[in-house]
Image (cartoon, helix red, strand yellow):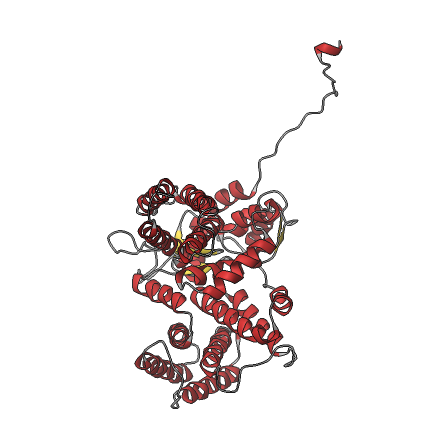
Length: 483
């Protein structure tokens, strides 16, 4: 009589999972990016700091920015926050929050409705058959309504929007004939994202979206399966709060510099003064989140950018304030260089930063001796170049990069030996970070062989080193002068 090799039962797996969970630090309180984001404070801020006629336009500008970044990274919490933010502003009294004249915001309204469609379709796999059919029908009617002639100006080619709508309608029809086809569902989500950026006014984020598609790179936001979550749960107790405020500032930073947006620039300056992220109670938690140190570098670059603009526009006293502004620019560039010097792919940016520092020194030495206009233009270009590099999607706050293709253009293989190999991208195992899989199915199939290594590496990460302490008698050392 022969026996087949035994496989781990569900009870054994549950016991192993509970053993690992017992070593986790559950006292740490995590909010965004691991829980829903609350933008109620931002609505209150707009109501308190803006004139009535400026409140709704400001809220609409912020909503467009947040929607663009939520679509770019497929961020469910930021997407839900956009929905709540819009409802909160729409519920305000029209006397205190005057609206636009009818028709003036129709173009932005299309972007918002496409965003709502993306938010709706993202929940598609969880629905029953009737809900799926009804939702697809509603989205199809909405797309057909967009296709009607409109006299709304657009920054993008009309042909791009028409092509995106045709593709979306085709995928909707295909999904209605095969409701459980996940491949068509994924293509529909990508098509809706492309359609959103055809109407979104955020040109800077649109360029990021195009660049990511052209390079074949992808991102995913922090979640309970990412390395950040394990890191927070395996260290001393933390209360991670106010990260959502830093996320808001990070989005506005990129709009302020990449699009030279005066409104976003002024808003960031005011928020940084009010929130003071450099306070240790905010700075340390932010740096523990993915790309937190790069967020600090972007803030430093923003400081340099606004100082250079203040000098170039003549909004400061050139005789008394110019030296301090140039010194602030040089200090900000030194901070950025310190933050990026250890990045694996920052080798091309270090010479740019060195040239920027040299230019700042030249400006300082030429004060009072001649014109520095050309040097200021050169310095501004260096700052914008470095900021553009640090604004790549994989460097945004609370965002991880998916495994990119290697230098030969070949995507890394899935660790599951039975995987057919038709892999576009892979993700590392969140527990051990030592192997990569193309999806959950392959990870589960390879669980038996990978489990010993995975559990050992997970224990090493989640079990903090115990520091032994010894109590001794308190001794008072007297100074020789008093003996």
